[in-house]
Length: 376
Ligand SMILES: [Zn+2]
Ligand SMILES: [Zn+2]
Image (cartoon, rainbow, N blue to C red):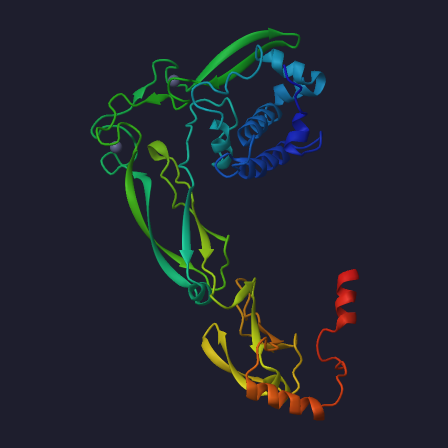
């Protein structure tokens, strides 16, 4: 038998935690670790472990036995492990009781409800749509509630019958002798999944599942400022649950197409603006791309290569809060690699009258600034 982790440690509660604290801790952890949500490796094992810890600590008798004898106390009590797991209804029965305020494990006649699966939809939108926000129509295959039986899974006009296996109690009891005396272990009835009733005449349309496969179409509102990798959660828009169980959620995972010229980092936009030496020296009005389209920007006389011209509030809208980021225009003075004859003549003339080069004061990122950035 593998080494088992401490149940209190699994739930993250102190040894003197109240019943209420244990319940709260389990609900929180179960929501986080549910295999529908947590798809990382070992999620199902962690979820089982969590369920097991909760089963023991939420039951006064078992908790006392566990406090006194550790895992041996509770393992022995149930005749070697918890047969409830994998007893035909999967390991996820108890979580739904916890979520829907149901009674703790072992209470008579409780109904086990299974929720529908969560769905993921990958949505690609244009750069401009991400900036302005957009409403998109999405169509996807899913399981919807059967409209013949209304989700019950039973043929209309027929009634569910009392489970012959458990006579309607929904549970199977097992009595065993332990060092602490007689212990009763209760698991859900495998025939009816703890419901106490079985569907004798399944609905002809959904074959008793209460759901049918169908394409669904939804309008999804994509907020302005969304970025690639972000997801929009649509609660209750996933698959319907079997036999009237609650629906799962739909997660729309967004990919934003890149702008051909602007580079986006969160709410900030960057553009590298190439200018000629005369434009930088004399000043010029040059076109730049913006979110709203092409626009003229004034490059002041004496602008250095690497200087930043910032257009405040012309970046991407902030997803939370108001306002927009900035558009950063980085000026690069381009030295021509090839010269025409008249260009060469003019530059020679300029060279004769030009003052020697002196590094600008605060004009742009100089060598010392760069070194400081590198070594700090
Ligand atoms: Zn049906
Ligand atoms: Zn039964």
